[in-house]
Length: 412
Ligand SMILES: Nc1ncnc2c1ncn2[C@@H]1O[C@H](COP(=O)(O)OP(=O)(O)OP(=O)(O)O)[C@@H](O)[C@H]1O
Ligand SMILES: [Mg+2]
Figure 1 (cartoon, rainbow, N blue to C red):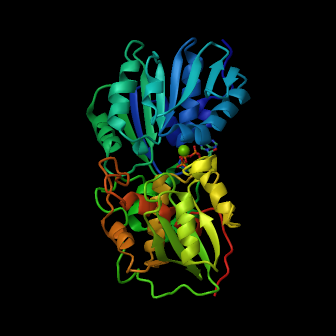
Figure 2: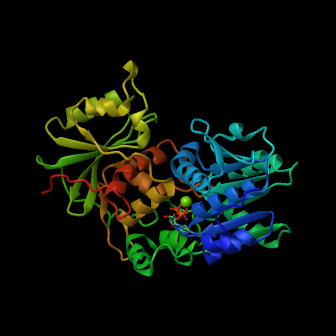
Figure 3: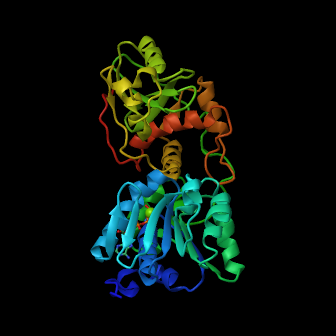
């Protein structure tokens, strides 16, 4: 068999190598952001698939969309560079290697697509943000590994003390299991200066979780530092304001947040709630603010969503009013969105850059009461907390230190 061109000692950093060389069948790695988790995951799955001909391997992301956005390019690149790819199936996200082994990219949000295959190994990237992780592992993936005595790597940044945390702890004491914890700095791909700077941009809890890979208690509030006095806005909408509007599509009441910018601050001053669909919400907005310039931030799904009659997409409806939509090609992960939002509410150095009109009862309720579920993700149980949070946080992302797009709005 052709020898793989890359060898772990040359290609991986020292901590990645520790995880790679360990011989446990089940490995759990909690690592900081940009540690090199996805890189290591790709390296491991390719190496293992190349070592074992005619076998099947799953490379799993929390959602199919994430698998396509994050892992697919790396997987294609690495197998092509190593000249071991025989066939690449773009629509099914599968790579067949020259030795007959196949690597399938999967989304944990579609468990049914993962049944019925006998697996030699599997990697779950960002396992901590998988919804229903116990079911995915115990009922879907673990049985698929049984006949081949396959292996599994769970690799992720922590997201609270959820099921990933349980596995991380169990792995320390169970035979055949092992677990590790490495910080962002351990990875060596982010320098100290940048980490210090992030410390100021994030709230303390998020910093410890994201950069130090600590398992923080997240069974509390999604926005723990919101304070109705300190985050209270005394601003009013002026005639020459550009209204920064944010939608959460795809939900019942179409919450539409209306923000203005004051210097580096974002003020949420109005909320239109209860619209039946996007057309409806736009009509309500136009009748309330007929003369204002407006820009929109939405979640990426609006490009394809058709929430209204007539087959128009949500975004094309907004554009038909002549307004600009600044949405992202892909959504930030929910954890990034929560962190960026919290950093605007109150950063580690206690700067507040997000303010709300406290007469907006639904908004204040959401910010004061929205909680994480048992998986460490914002709970979807309440009638509107998650929808209102999504609506404003998609917008705030753009103005936070973490958001990548900088947009000019007219400012007073
Ligand atoms: N062993 C390596 N050799 C060279 N570059 C690497 C190595 N490991 C990681 N990198 C690079 O470091 C950067 C971060 O790696 P990667 O995306 O795997 O990190 P991550 O932990 O998955 O990040 P995130 O938290 O954003 O998911 C990438 O540009 C990647 O190519
Ligand atoms: Mg990654």
